[in-house]
Image 1: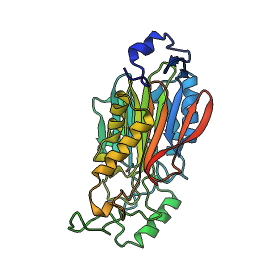
Image 2: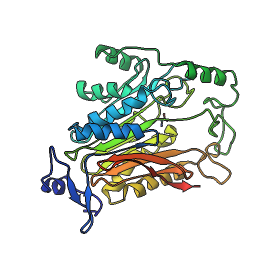
Image 3: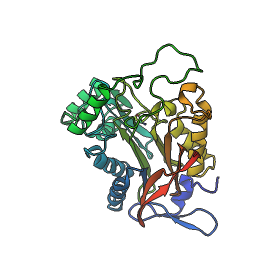
Image 4: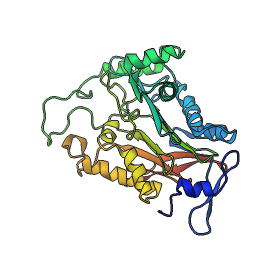
Length: 348
Ligand code: GLY
């Protein structure tokens, strides 16, 4: 067994389940405090604090991470998630979210969901109240309505004004592409302008019983083609969780991650012995290797976009990495408090 992972059998042997914080030896004489621990993307400082607060009160990791991201979903000032998220090309806010529950291995997700402020809660209902994993568009909204979710207008004045500005300045900045070859550049908007972003929040956690769960939620790419779905609600891409190994999730250019299923890859790398940070860097490198079209590369042949990954393993070790640039951070909370941790990166 790799030194930086703890099998469920080894964990159970510690006899520290249910109601007490678990302490698990990880290397030599070092002792690491395991649950509760929560990680999130850089916009999740309040989210991880809330998730840990709930887990300290006995909440399951799944309920805790959803409660954490709800704070961001309902925040009108976060223009990349839930209420206040920037809309699609037609001015409609379409939301994607997924949850995964380590103990059961079950997942639930919604995509292109309109009018529901808390898509992560609907994803949770898909997990708990259906035999399916992913519901989309009208079907997802009908399911939400059936479970009592109010259908609301999620387009804030601020988001509407940004959308109108985009619409009034359309040029080669949309996502439709003319016929082109792999060497063609300056097509579409792969080189992001200031108002183009893929926001999103991911959160994973280990609770007091040592169980792991994850959630990712987003309004996706601003001004996307209606119906476009990113990586966030796709199990294995926007998040993945294995109760014996750990969890991972992403933010950034969803298209690149969809073509590499990197959250699954990260968890498998951790299973093989990588630290969370090394596993995230491995995923970044895989995406870079898979980026072969000139329109997606800068003048050095590197990806011109960013994808960030966040991971934790069963022993409570956390780490993250992104493709481009120093300065990326992730939010971490545990019994010692809440802090921001630097992300490793592939290219300056
Ligand atoms: N990573 C979020 C998205 O691409 O929609």
